[in-house]
Length: 209
Image (tube, rainbow, N blue to C red; front, side, top):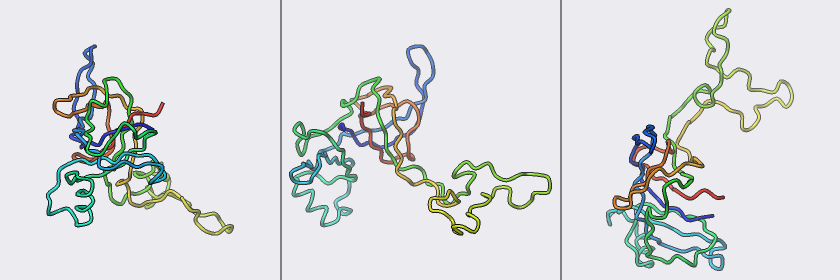
């Protein structure tokens, strides 16, 4: 388990590699993140570093969270997330984590909340093929078909893929390549798409070897 950083998804664009080939990249404004708390095995039964990202208006900070930040002597942050690490000895509260943590060509995992699609049928949600489109078949072209188990056990089994709410789930895309790092502007370019909508929070961590 390795350290990571929090970021805000800016959007997608394209850049050109050394061979002149266009590469689609996701631009993420990552950090600087402030370490708010250190989790230790002795106190919390696990090792982790809690990072904070983004400014927030004092009026929007609840009293419990205001007291939490004051106790840590850290300015309130909009987002708080934890990264599990093997060793916390190299970190301390108040320390800043920047995009310098990553290098060009490095492989990372990116976690975000996928775009919400609302209520969706089985074709869109699960990629079902649908029922026949001709030869007397009518009305149920986009239906899932049989979902039961005959007389025994006479019920729909748990986990059956059906229509329902699609998206708005925590999704991790693994083995993405860091295409570029702009330390001056706190930007990191990642080849390909990452989960989430524009301005959404993402977590970037080095891929476990």
